[in-house]
Length: 112
Length: 112
Image 1 (cartoon, helix red, strand yellow):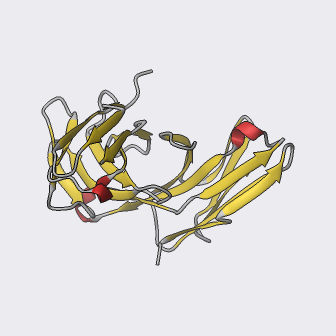
Image 2: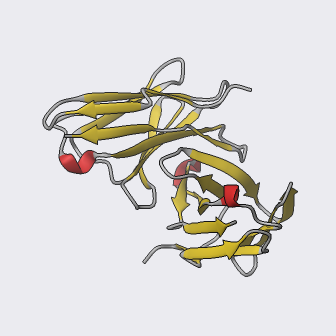
């Protein structure tokens, strides 16, 4: 069965560079959630989208932006990267009204 | 204060032991997830519960909605069960959306 696909799996960037992370949800899932998990930390909610509209916003820095496209995939754009942005970024997808969440394997971002 | 509390934070067991991890939450939820994360790895959804009990192989998850408490049990534990186990609850938000709130995880180490 298809799962949530994230790309790239690993990414190394220098400070002040820009990164774009992609998330492809389960087919027919209309909601995408982005989370950031720092080393040894629990996941922190960044932002979510339902039917291509932002549905909720968490602790996402102003340097980050995200959107959901017509095919329901989502991209997280991160600018002016800082060392503290090094983390595992994972997304999850679900279908509103149904209970199941499916998680991607994450993108491990290292800022050097 | 984290609205989802897990205990214990760390757990070390010998192979074959029965393991219990607990999760308590503070407000009404629509569902609760038990997740597994291996070191450096992505998140795997083990169970989604809204009531009662579920079993999959050596894993059993229970939830008591009235007491706002859930437990994850591992029978006949094995070193490959070593991972971080995370409880996450789904909180409904205004407007029909919802968010997932994570506990801080329980790090389980099973020694041979």
